[in-house]
Length: 96
Image 1 (cartoon, helix red, strand yellow):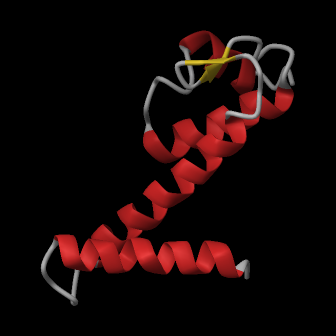
Image 2: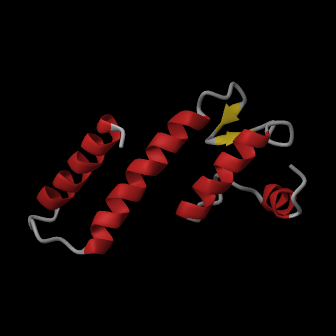
Protein backbone atom coordinates (compact mmCIF):
# COMPACT_ATOMS: atom_id res chain seq x y z
CA UNK A 1 0.00 0.00 0.00
CA UNK A 2 1.06 3.57 -0.67
CA UNK A 3 2.07 4.95 2.75
CA UNK A 4 0.98 8.47 1.85
CA UNK A 5 -2.52 7.34 0.89
CA UNK A 6 -2.70 5.08 3.94
CA UNK A 7 -1.70 7.91 6.26
CA UNK A 8 -4.09 10.38 4.66
CA UNK A 9 -7.01 7.93 4.90
CA UNK A 10 -6.11 7.26 8.54
CA UNK A 11 -6.07 11.02 9.12
CA UNK A 12 -9.53 11.35 7.49
CA UNK A 13 -10.88 8.63 9.80
CA UNK A 14 -9.33 10.29 12.86
CA UNK A 15 -10.82 13.63 11.82
CA UNK A 16 -14.24 11.99 11.45
CA UNK A 17 -13.95 10.58 14.96
CA UNK A 18 -13.15 14.03 16.32
CA UNK A 19 -15.91 15.68 14.28
CA UNK A 20 -18.47 13.16 15.56
CA UNK A 21 -16.98 13.23 19.07
CA UNK A 22 -16.94 9.44 19.13
CA UNK A 23 -14.08 7.00 18.60
CA UNK A 24 -16.59 4.24 17.89
CA UNK A 25 -18.15 5.80 14.82
CA UNK A 26 -20.45 3.99 12.43
CA UNK A 27 -18.88 2.13 9.51
CA UNK A 28 -20.95 4.24 7.11
CA UNK A 29 -19.30 7.41 8.38
CA UNK A 30 -15.88 5.82 7.93
CA UNK A 31 -16.83 4.70 4.42
CA UNK A 32 -18.00 8.23 3.53
CA UNK A 33 -14.73 9.71 4.78
CA UNK A 34 -12.68 7.24 2.76
CA UNK A 35 -14.76 7.77 -0.38
CA UNK A 36 -14.55 11.54 0.12
CA UNK A 37 -10.80 11.26 0.29
CA UNK A 38 -10.75 9.08 -2.85
CA UNK A 39 -12.94 11.58 -4.74
CA UNK A 40 -10.55 14.41 -3.86
CA UNK A 41 -7.57 12.38 -5.10
CA UNK A 42 -9.36 11.46 -8.35
CA UNK A 43 -10.41 15.08 -8.89
CA UNK A 44 -6.74 16.01 -8.50
CA UNK A 45 -5.83 13.57 -11.27
CA UNK A 46 -8.61 14.91 -13.50
CA UNK A 47 -7.39 18.48 -13.01
CA UNK A 48 -4.21 17.64 -14.93
CA UNK A 49 -6.31 17.88 -18.10
CA UNK A 50 -6.00 21.35 -19.59
CA UNK A 51 -9.65 21.31 -20.72
CA UNK A 52 -11.31 21.10 -17.29
CA UNK A 53 -14.08 23.58 -16.55
CA UNK A 54 -16.22 23.29 -13.42
CA UNK A 55 -14.98 19.77 -12.73
CA UNK A 56 -15.66 18.40 -16.22
CA UNK A 57 -13.43 17.89 -19.26
CA UNK A 58 -14.85 19.92 -22.12
CA UNK A 59 -13.24 17.66 -24.75
CA UNK A 60 -14.30 14.37 -23.13
CA UNK A 61 -15.21 12.90 -26.55
CA UNK A 62 -11.49 13.05 -27.42
CA UNK A 63 -10.15 12.12 -23.98
CA UNK A 64 -11.03 8.52 -23.15
CA UNK A 65 -9.15 8.70 -19.87
CA UNK A 66 -11.04 11.82 -18.77
CA UNK A 67 -14.37 10.23 -19.62
CA UNK A 68 -13.50 7.06 -17.70
CA UNK A 69 -12.30 9.02 -14.71
CA UNK A 70 -15.39 11.22 -14.74
CA UNK A 71 -17.55 8.09 -14.90
CA UNK A 72 -15.77 6.69 -11.83
CA UNK A 73 -16.34 9.97 -10.00
CA UNK A 74 -19.99 9.98 -11.08
CA UNK A 75 -20.40 6.35 -10.00
CA UNK A 76 -19.00 7.11 -6.53
CA UNK A 77 -20.84 10.40 -5.96
CA UNK A 78 -23.94 10.33 -8.20
CA UNK A 79 -23.11 13.98 -8.86
CA UNK A 80 -24.14 15.13 -12.34
CA UNK A 81 -21.30 17.66 -12.40
CA UNK A 82 -19.09 14.79 -13.57
CA UNK A 83 -21.30 13.30 -16.30
CA UNK A 84 -23.96 14.81 -18.54
CA UNK A 85 -26.65 12.63 -20.14
CA UNK A 86 -24.76 12.84 -23.43
CA UNK A 87 -21.56 11.65 -21.77
CA UNK A 88 -23.36 8.78 -20.03
CA UNK A 89 -24.93 7.68 -23.28
CA UNK A 90 -21.57 7.80 -25.05
CA UNK A 91 -19.90 5.87 -22.23
CA UNK A 92 -22.65 3.24 -21.98
CA UNK A 93 -22.63 2.60 -25.73
CA UNK A 94 -18.95 1.74 -25.44
CA UNK A 95 -17.84 4.34 -27.95
CA UNK A 96 -14.50 4.81 -26.26
